[in-house]
Length: 342
Image (cartoon, rainbow, N blue to C red; front, side, top):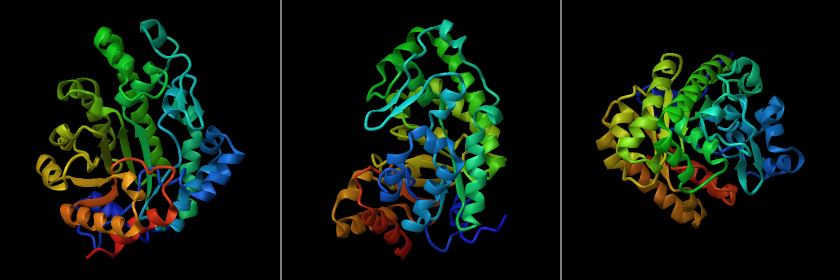
Protein backbone atom coordinates (compact mmCIF):
# COMPACT_ATOMS: atom_id res chain seq x y z
CA UNK A 1 0.00 0.00 0.00
CA UNK A 2 1.24 3.51 -0.80
CA UNK A 3 1.83 5.95 2.01
CA UNK A 4 -0.86 8.63 2.14
CA UNK A 5 -0.03 11.70 0.07
CA UNK A 6 -2.71 13.67 1.94
CA UNK A 7 -3.16 12.69 5.59
CA UNK A 8 -4.78 15.92 6.82
CA UNK A 9 -7.93 14.11 7.92
CA UNK A 10 -6.05 11.53 10.00
CA UNK A 11 -3.87 14.21 11.59
CA UNK A 12 -6.96 16.21 12.59
CA UNK A 13 -8.60 13.05 13.98
CA UNK A 14 -5.51 12.40 16.11
CA UNK A 15 -5.49 15.99 17.36
CA UNK A 16 -2.27 16.90 15.56
CA UNK A 17 -1.66 20.31 14.02
CA UNK A 18 -2.56 20.55 10.32
CA UNK A 19 -1.27 23.10 7.79
CA UNK A 20 -4.91 23.69 6.77
CA UNK A 21 -8.32 22.37 7.77
CA UNK A 22 -9.31 19.07 6.09
CA UNK A 23 -12.67 18.97 4.33
CA UNK A 24 -15.06 16.29 3.05
CA UNK A 25 -18.87 16.03 2.77
CA UNK A 26 -21.28 13.46 4.07
CA UNK A 27 -22.94 11.67 1.13
CA UNK A 28 -20.32 13.18 -1.19
CA UNK A 29 -20.23 9.96 -3.25
CA UNK A 30 -23.52 9.97 -5.04
CA UNK A 31 -26.75 11.68 -5.72
CA UNK A 32 -25.63 15.19 -6.77
CA UNK A 33 -22.87 14.01 -9.17
CA UNK A 34 -23.89 13.72 -12.85
CA UNK A 35 -21.59 10.70 -13.36
CA UNK A 36 -23.26 8.95 -10.46
CA UNK A 37 -26.71 9.67 -11.85
CA UNK A 38 -25.70 7.90 -15.11
CA UNK A 39 -24.77 4.78 -13.10
CA UNK A 40 -28.00 5.04 -11.13
CA UNK A 41 -29.96 4.81 -14.37
CA UNK A 42 -28.14 1.58 -15.27
CA UNK A 43 -27.89 -0.29 -11.96
CA UNK A 44 -30.17 -0.75 -8.95
CA UNK A 45 -29.07 0.64 -5.59
CA UNK A 46 -27.90 -2.68 -4.19
CA UNK A 47 -26.09 -3.50 -7.43
CA UNK A 48 -24.14 -0.27 -6.98
CA UNK A 49 -23.31 -1.29 -3.40
CA UNK A 50 -22.59 -4.95 -4.09
CA UNK A 51 -20.43 -4.69 -7.21
CA UNK A 52 -17.02 -3.64 -5.84
CA UNK A 53 -16.05 -2.01 -9.18
CA UNK A 54 -19.13 0.21 -9.12
CA UNK A 55 -18.83 1.06 -5.42
CA UNK A 56 -15.16 1.96 -5.98
CA UNK A 57 -15.89 4.13 -9.01
CA UNK A 58 -18.56 6.03 -7.07
CA UNK A 59 -16.38 6.36 -3.96
CA UNK A 60 -13.46 7.99 -5.77
CA UNK A 61 -15.56 10.37 -7.94
CA UNK A 62 -15.72 13.28 -5.47
CA UNK A 63 -12.00 13.06 -4.69
CA UNK A 64 -11.15 14.04 -8.27
CA UNK A 65 -14.29 15.98 -9.22
CA UNK A 66 -14.76 18.09 -6.10
CA UNK A 67 -11.34 17.91 -4.43
CA UNK A 68 -12.28 16.56 -0.99
CA UNK A 69 -9.57 15.40 1.46
CA UNK A 70 -11.08 11.95 2.06
CA UNK A 71 -13.12 9.25 0.33
CA UNK A 72 -16.02 7.57 2.13
CA UNK A 73 -16.96 4.12 0.89
CA UNK A 74 -20.17 4.04 -1.15
CA UNK A 75 -22.61 1.84 0.78
CA UNK A 76 -25.67 2.19 3.00
CA UNK A 77 -26.34 1.82 6.72
CA UNK A 78 -29.14 -0.67 5.92
CA UNK A 79 -26.76 -3.37 4.69
CA UNK A 80 -26.50 -4.37 8.38
CA UNK A 81 -30.22 -5.16 8.92
CA UNK A 82 -30.07 -6.97 5.56
CA UNK A 83 -27.11 -9.07 6.74
CA UNK A 84 -29.02 -9.82 9.98
CA UNK A 85 -31.83 -11.39 7.97
CA UNK A 86 -34.27 -8.59 7.13
CA UNK A 87 -35.53 -7.76 3.69
CA UNK A 88 -34.53 -4.21 2.71
CA UNK A 89 -35.76 -2.50 -0.44
CA UNK A 90 -34.33 0.85 -1.49
CA UNK A 91 -36.80 2.56 -3.75
CA UNK A 92 -35.54 5.57 -5.74
CA UNK A 93 -37.22 8.82 -4.64
CA UNK A 94 -39.11 7.18 -1.73
CA UNK A 95 -36.24 5.75 0.31
CA UNK A 96 -35.92 2.53 2.32
CA UNK A 97 -38.71 0.01 2.88
CA UNK A 98 -38.40 -2.99 5.22
CA UNK A 99 -41.60 -4.86 4.39
CA UNK A 100 -41.51 -7.20 7.40
CA UNK A 101 -40.62 -5.02 10.42
CA UNK A 102 -39.83 -6.23 13.94
CA UNK A 103 -42.89 -6.02 16.17
CA UNK A 104 -42.28 -8.52 18.96
CA UNK A 105 -39.84 -10.95 20.60
CA UNK A 106 -41.10 -13.58 18.14
CA UNK A 107 -39.70 -11.52 15.24
CA UNK A 108 -36.20 -11.56 16.71
CA UNK A 109 -36.08 -15.30 16.06
CA UNK A 110 -35.70 -14.66 12.33
CA UNK A 111 -32.73 -12.34 12.91
CA UNK A 112 -29.13 -13.37 13.50
CA UNK A 113 -25.82 -11.84 14.45
CA UNK A 114 -24.23 -12.84 11.14
CA UNK A 115 -20.73 -13.78 10.17
CA UNK A 116 -19.99 -10.41 8.54
CA UNK A 117 -17.11 -11.82 6.47
CA UNK A 118 -19.70 -13.95 4.74
CA UNK A 119 -22.76 -11.67 4.53
CA UNK A 120 -20.99 -8.33 3.99
CA UNK A 121 -17.90 -9.46 2.07
CA UNK A 122 -18.87 -7.16 -0.85
CA UNK A 123 -18.30 -4.08 1.37
CA UNK A 124 -14.83 -5.31 2.32
CA UNK A 125 -14.07 -6.15 -1.32
CA UNK A 126 -15.11 -2.61 -2.29
CA UNK A 127 -12.92 -1.12 0.46
CA UNK A 128 -9.88 -3.13 -0.65
CA UNK A 129 -10.38 -2.21 -4.30
CA UNK A 130 -10.98 1.47 -3.45
CA UNK A 131 -7.86 1.56 -1.30
CA UNK A 132 -5.85 0.20 -4.21
CA UNK A 133 -7.47 2.58 -6.70
CA UNK A 134 -6.87 5.66 -4.53
CA UNK A 135 -3.21 4.68 -4.32
CA UNK A 136 -2.65 6.82 -1.24
CA UNK A 137 -4.29 9.98 -2.66
CA UNK A 138 -6.49 10.51 0.43
CA UNK A 139 -7.66 8.47 3.46
CA UNK A 140 -10.61 6.11 3.09
CA UNK A 141 -13.49 6.30 5.57
CA UNK A 142 -15.65 3.29 6.50
CA UNK A 143 -18.99 3.66 8.29
CA UNK A 144 -22.00 2.06 9.93
CA UNK A 145 -25.35 3.16 11.26
CA UNK A 146 -25.65 3.45 15.03
CA UNK A 147 -27.84 0.79 16.72
CA UNK A 148 -30.64 3.21 17.65
CA UNK A 149 -30.94 4.51 14.06
CA UNK A 150 -30.98 0.96 12.65
CA UNK A 151 -33.63 -0.08 15.18
CA UNK A 152 -35.74 2.86 13.95
CA UNK A 153 -35.83 1.43 10.42
CA UNK A 154 -36.12 -2.21 11.52
CA UNK A 155 -39.17 -1.47 13.67
CA UNK A 156 -40.83 1.37 11.71
CA UNK A 157 -40.34 -0.48 8.42
CA UNK A 158 -39.65 2.74 6.51
CA UNK A 159 -38.31 6.26 6.88
CA UNK A 160 -40.18 8.66 9.17
CA UNK A 161 -39.76 12.15 10.57
CA UNK A 162 -40.69 11.05 14.09
CA UNK A 163 -40.30 7.23 14.23
CA UNK A 164 -43.24 6.96 16.65
CA UNK A 165 -43.63 3.20 16.14
CA UNK A 166 -39.94 2.63 16.94
CA UNK A 167 -40.16 4.75 20.09
CA UNK A 168 -43.40 3.07 21.19
CA UNK A 169 -41.68 -0.32 20.72
CA UNK A 170 -38.86 0.77 23.06
CA UNK A 171 -41.29 2.03 25.70
CA UNK A 172 -43.73 -0.89 25.47
CA UNK A 173 -41.23 -3.75 25.02
CA UNK A 174 -37.96 -2.47 26.49
CA UNK A 175 -36.47 -5.94 27.02
CA UNK A 176 -37.03 -6.87 23.35
CA UNK A 177 -35.71 -3.47 22.24
CA UNK A 178 -32.50 -3.93 24.25
CA UNK A 179 -32.04 -7.44 22.90
CA UNK A 180 -32.34 -6.12 19.34
CA UNK A 181 -30.01 -3.19 20.06
CA UNK A 182 -27.40 -5.59 21.45
CA UNK A 183 -27.65 -7.81 18.36
CA UNK A 184 -27.14 -4.76 16.13
CA UNK A 185 -24.23 -3.63 18.33
CA UNK A 186 -22.45 -7.00 18.15
CA UNK A 187 -22.91 -7.08 14.36
CA UNK A 188 -21.67 -3.48 13.99
CA UNK A 189 -18.52 -4.08 16.05
CA UNK A 190 -17.55 -7.04 13.84
CA UNK A 191 -18.51 -5.07 10.72
CA UNK A 192 -16.41 -1.99 11.53
CA UNK A 193 -13.40 -4.07 12.60
CA UNK A 194 -13.55 -5.94 9.29
CA UNK A 195 -13.86 -2.63 7.39
CA UNK A 196 -10.64 -1.45 9.05
CA UNK A 197 -8.92 -4.73 8.17
CA UNK A 198 -10.06 -4.30 4.55
CA UNK A 199 -8.50 -0.85 4.27
CA UNK A 200 -10.63 1.81 6.01
CA UNK A 201 -8.27 4.35 7.62
CA UNK A 202 -10.97 5.55 10.03
CA UNK A 203 -14.68 4.92 10.61
CA UNK A 204 -17.80 6.93 11.33
CA UNK A 205 -20.91 5.91 13.24
CA UNK A 206 -24.07 7.62 11.97
CA UNK A 207 -26.86 8.11 14.51
CA UNK A 208 -29.16 9.99 12.16
CA UNK A 209 -32.15 9.79 14.51
CA UNK A 210 -30.41 10.30 17.86
CA UNK A 211 -31.94 13.75 18.17
CA UNK A 212 -35.46 12.25 18.36
CA UNK A 213 -34.74 11.01 21.90
CA UNK A 214 -34.77 12.90 25.18
CA UNK A 215 -31.34 13.14 26.86
CA UNK A 216 -32.29 10.31 29.25
CA UNK A 217 -33.61 8.05 26.47
CA UNK A 218 -30.59 8.88 24.32
CA UNK A 219 -28.39 7.48 27.09
CA UNK A 220 -30.57 4.35 27.43
CA UNK A 221 -31.29 3.45 23.82
CA UNK A 222 -28.38 4.99 21.92
CA UNK A 223 -25.30 6.04 23.85
CA UNK A 224 -25.10 2.85 25.92
CA UNK A 225 -24.58 0.92 22.67
CA UNK A 226 -22.42 3.47 20.84
CA UNK A 227 -20.09 3.43 23.84
CA UNK A 228 -19.56 -0.32 23.36
CA UNK A 229 -18.80 0.16 19.66
CA UNK A 230 -16.33 3.02 20.19
CA UNK A 231 -14.54 1.09 22.96
CA UNK A 232 -14.24 -2.01 20.75
CA UNK A 233 -13.01 -0.21 17.63
CA UNK A 234 -11.02 2.90 18.64
CA UNK A 235 -7.70 1.11 19.15
CA UNK A 236 -7.87 -0.23 15.58
CA UNK A 237 -8.60 3.14 13.88
CA UNK A 238 -9.90 6.65 14.69
CA UNK A 239 -13.67 6.80 15.25
CA UNK A 240 -16.11 9.65 14.57
CA UNK A 241 -19.56 9.67 16.20
CA UNK A 242 -22.24 11.74 14.47
CA UNK A 243 -25.60 11.90 16.26
CA UNK A 244 -27.76 14.38 14.39
CA UNK A 245 -29.75 16.65 16.69
CA UNK A 246 -28.15 15.23 19.85
CA UNK A 247 -25.95 18.25 20.63
CA UNK A 248 -27.21 17.99 24.24
CA UNK A 249 -25.02 14.88 24.65
CA UNK A 250 -21.76 16.23 23.19
CA UNK A 251 -20.04 16.01 26.58
CA UNK A 252 -21.16 12.38 27.07
CA UNK A 253 -20.23 11.47 23.50
CA UNK A 254 -16.76 12.99 23.95
CA UNK A 255 -16.38 10.77 27.04
CA UNK A 256 -16.83 7.61 24.90
CA UNK A 257 -13.24 8.01 23.73
CA UNK A 258 -14.27 8.81 20.15
CA UNK A 259 -11.64 10.84 18.28
CA UNK A 260 -14.19 13.12 16.65
CA UNK A 261 -17.79 14.29 17.02
CA UNK A 262 -19.88 15.33 14.04
CA UNK A 263 -22.30 18.17 14.68
CA UNK A 264 -25.23 19.57 12.75
CA UNK A 265 -26.03 23.22 12.07
CA UNK A 266 -28.36 23.67 15.06
CA UNK A 267 -25.57 24.56 17.49
CA UNK A 268 -22.92 27.30 17.30
CA UNK A 269 -19.31 26.10 16.94
CA UNK A 270 -18.24 27.86 20.15
CA UNK A 271 -20.99 26.22 22.18
CA UNK A 272 -20.25 22.79 20.67
CA UNK A 273 -16.61 23.19 21.72
CA UNK A 274 -17.70 24.24 25.20
CA UNK A 275 -19.81 21.08 25.58
CA UNK A 276 -17.37 18.69 23.92
CA UNK A 277 -14.19 19.99 25.59
CA UNK A 278 -10.75 20.32 24.01
CA UNK A 279 -9.74 16.65 23.77
CA UNK A 280 -11.90 15.74 20.80
CA UNK A 281 -12.00 16.87 17.16
CA UNK A 282 -15.20 18.50 15.89
CA UNK A 283 -16.59 17.93 12.40
CA UNK A 284 -19.31 19.92 10.63
CA UNK A 285 -21.55 21.84 10.53
CA UNK A 286 -22.60 23.61 7.32
CA UNK A 287 -26.32 23.38 6.52
CA UNK A 288 -26.48 21.32 3.28
CA UNK A 289 -29.44 23.43 2.06
CA UNK A 290 -27.17 26.49 2.19
CA UNK A 291 -25.20 24.97 -0.70
CA UNK A 292 -28.18 26.04 -2.82
CA UNK A 293 -27.43 29.72 -2.09
CA UNK A 294 -25.47 31.81 -4.63
CA UNK A 295 -21.73 30.97 -4.58
CA UNK A 296 -20.65 34.31 -2.99
CA UNK A 297 -23.09 33.59 -0.12
CA UNK A 298 -21.69 30.07 0.28
CA UNK A 299 -18.13 31.43 0.50
CA UNK A 300 -19.11 34.02 3.08
CA UNK A 301 -20.96 31.44 5.23
CA UNK A 302 -18.05 28.96 5.00
CA UNK A 303 -15.60 31.63 6.20
CA UNK A 304 -17.89 32.42 9.15
CA UNK A 305 -18.07 28.72 10.01
CA UNK A 306 -14.28 28.36 9.80
CA UNK A 307 -13.76 31.38 12.05
CA UNK A 308 -16.22 29.93 14.56
CA UNK A 309 -14.43 26.58 14.86
CA UNK A 310 -10.85 27.80 14.72
CA UNK A 311 -8.14 25.70 13.11
CA UNK A 312 -7.26 23.15 15.77
CA UNK A 313 -9.01 19.77 16.07
CA UNK A 314 -11.49 20.64 13.34
CA UNK A 315 -12.69 18.95 10.12
CA UNK A 316 -14.90 21.01 7.81
CA UNK A 317 -18.01 19.16 6.66
CA UNK A 318 -21.75 19.51 6.25
CA UNK A 319 -24.11 19.10 9.20
CA UNK A 320 -25.87 16.23 7.35
CA UNK A 321 -25.71 14.59 3.90
CA UNK A 322 -25.43 16.68 0.72
CA UNK A 323 -28.78 17.20 -1.06
CA UNK A 324 -29.40 15.68 -4.52
CA UNK A 325 -30.13 19.08 -6.13
CA UNK A 326 -26.87 20.79 -5.14
CA UNK A 327 -24.94 21.93 -8.24
CA UNK A 328 -21.44 20.42 -8.40
CA UNK A 329 -19.81 23.86 -8.67
CA UNK A 330 -21.53 24.87 -5.41
CA UNK A 331 -20.13 21.79 -3.66
CA UNK A 332 -16.73 22.67 -5.13
CA UNK A 333 -17.05 26.27 -3.90
CA UNK A 334 -17.61 24.90 -0.38
CA UNK A 335 -14.50 22.70 -0.59
CA UNK A 336 -12.32 25.36 -2.23
CA UNK A 337 -13.27 28.02 0.31
CA UNK A 338 -12.22 25.71 3.15
CA UNK A 339 -8.92 24.94 1.41
CA UNK A 340 -8.14 28.62 0.75
CA UNK A 341 -9.14 29.80 4.22
CA UNK A 342 -6.34 31.48 6.15
